[in-house]
Length: 409
Ligand SMILES: Cc1cc2nc3c(=O)[nH]c(=O)nc-3n(C[C@H](O)[C@H](O)[C@H](O)COP(=O)(O)OP(=O)(O)OC[C@H]3O[C@@H](n4cnc5c(N)ncnc54)[C@H](O)[C@@H]3O)c2cc1C
Image (cartoon, rainbow, N blue to C red):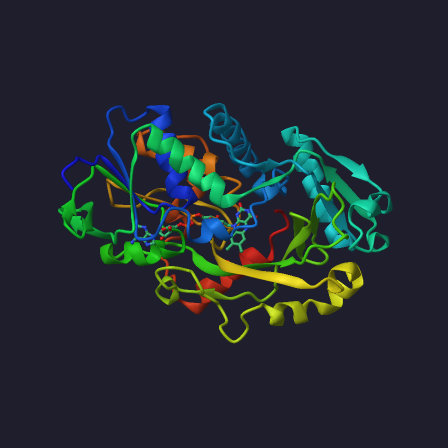
């Protein structure tokens, strides 16, 4: 590679692509030659598998995510102004509650929405029955309606970031193996033709980040937790105005998908793998090869589905999508320089919201690279867990629990 590289980003998923774009677009590292490297095609791994809810509504404990998601929504408009269109389906979201515990969850979301100026209103669940004929709305006692919520196509959004970055001179080298190495306590990158010594190296390698960091004796403080959803066949149970749904009693999220219903279930006892157990390419990867359509989870949820969503149970399933979502024990992102390494940073720990928060997180990472100190960055510090045994069962259990406790999109 003859061209000089000042900043190397390892990973061309949505995080790496967004980071490269924000760095180039903001001009905060003047003259920087930015190179994004990935052994796979861009956005072909976890990013293309996401349900891609762009949820603004969050509990108080995650209210600091709201500005990050707003930045992603603003980025979609910025990209559109450049002629790079990304679908943003603003279908609204309905949060439903039955039990007292979930009514408390809704109260938490409402208070956070008030504090952050999010549009929402209380609705009588029965009055929304025509929007969601596959749910038994008589089972729910409270509903919050967030009209500005929506979803996107995650592959197109990640590709749009990459296209905008390329327009600004960022180079993408995909299909090339890359390994992190060290030279006099500086991170550098080994490529097939030799070693490059960028001034800055950022790892944005999603579920592979632990594997990428290991040659330097470092761990990524996260676990690759199974995330899964199903898509029904086309069904008349999807009215044209079907909103997204979050029903925490059922641990379900759902959204329309071209005349079908896409729904995910957040299992209580999830599964996680180490980055060594992941293939280099997720195509065909299953967390549980003996259960390639997620039947075990559907069976575990059968009682709750029959109770709350009888129409869904009667609709045939056409697709099962699963992939690794990187959770941390506190359910928060990983953005920052790695301790004791001057030129090495990490952007990972998506916690199931990496599509929604992509542009906001990329701006934070870009600030770090430019030597700025954005407010609130300490809560994302990769060093906040101390020394981590990322492959230890206890660590993975804490990350799985963080996913199981999620109440937002
Ligand atoms: C089923 C499912 C549903 C989801 N639903 C949502 C949702 O509704 N909303 C939401 O916001 N998020 C959702 N997510 C999470 C979302 O997919 C992630 O937050 C996001 O894709 C993370 O992007 P990433 O760039 O970190 O990872 P990836 O897209 O996996 O990118 C990582 C890249 O690193 C590359 N890599 C590996 N090794 C190396 C190496 N040695 N050098 C360089 N590169 C390397 C990989 O090839 C890959 O391209 C969901 C995830 C799943 C699995």
